[in-house]
Amino acid sequence: MSATDNHGSATRAVRAGIDCDHHHGAVVPPIHLSATFSFEGFNKKRTYDYTRSGNPTRSQLAEALAVLEEGTSGVVTSTGMSAVALVLHLVKPGEVVYAAHDCYGGTQRLLRALSSRGHFDLVLADLTSPDVEADIARRKPRLVWIETPSNPLLRITDIRRVAAAGHAVGALVVADNTFLSPALQRPLTLGADIVVHSTTKYLNGHSDVVGGAVVTRDAALGEELAWWANCLGVTGSPFDSYLTLRGVRTLFARMSQHLANAQAVADALVRHEAVGAVYYPGLTTHPGHALAKSQQSGFGAIVSFELLGGLDALESFTSELRCFTLAESLGGVESLIAHPATMTHSSMDPSARATAGIKDSLLRLSVGIELAEDLVTDLTHALDRTAERTRAQVAADLPFRDAEVSVLAEVDA
Image (cartoon, rainbow, N blue to C red; front, side):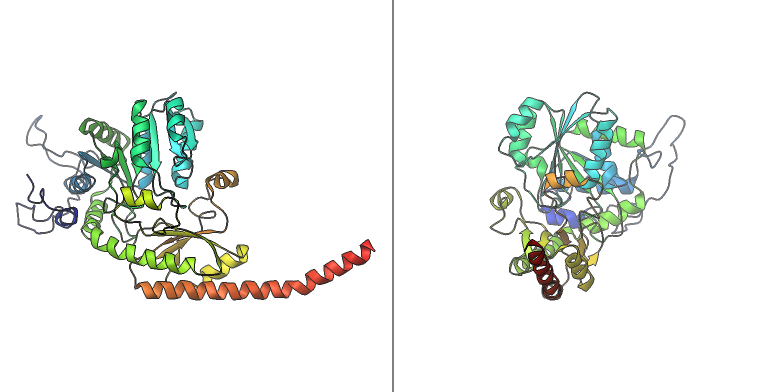
């Protein structure tokens, strides 16, 4: 039994891998960068023989994530997308993958590409629909793919309800927990069989590592995924695993500040005239607010909103920001802003984005851990400037519009 088995999750995160070096007593575990490991003798393999198959540093991260997600085993992969691809190897041709229609653009791109090649049949559906249980019963999928909160509209899927519907027809249920991390949500305890992460995001938390992870509730399923990960060569590197484990140790402390800042930002956006709509589960007006409270221990640090004024307003607004960097990704200590239609979800065609509800006016904020007042001031200033420019442009256009109306009136006469 580990010394932290009876401790809380935050303690387990901090203590992950600490004081386990029995050779030299290093408090922080060393990085095992070796590509290969010697055999004890002829036909006597040690625990590790080749880093693609297994590595002590990567194992420490995998074990830490399995503990935090309350699973039995974890597989650390090279990227979040390789984690997604790994799980999809559990599905055979002719079987159905039933996935959220508003999931991450990269996930949807891979689902569509593999489906088009006959790897499986794909159904994209609204998992928040009241008809989802009946639809799952009719489709009989092999795998149900949940993403909650969804990217970028932050729709909340009832994991218990969808998992029960999936299990009723023998499906495996996967939940992408990237947006919340195990600090705020544990899908395996709500009925999911597999949890997927882009560890690039909150688990690492510093935007300097690209990685992924898969955690399973069932040990046998974990072994099957580990076999595929080795076979495909998608396992993560030791150095990236070391950095991610270092990030995990501050996960709970970081998330506390992320949450406070995100709520302050959402409240400020709601009050501004230049904002058409705000999507954040922490707002009582959000349709998934009550459900989020029931299955999450926090509302997350992603805030999306629609900006009024068209393309010119988007360009003006983003150029005015100083505390939010225009960049893809999320979950780092620094605040970022993204335009999903041209960035994270550009691989989806316009009709698919429209079906998912992703408008061209939508912006997504990854709220960092800077001072909340600085973030709010920065956003408010940029919104004010954008609103002023929009009003000025409208005023400048009016004489031309009036002249056009006058000319048309004369022609009609």
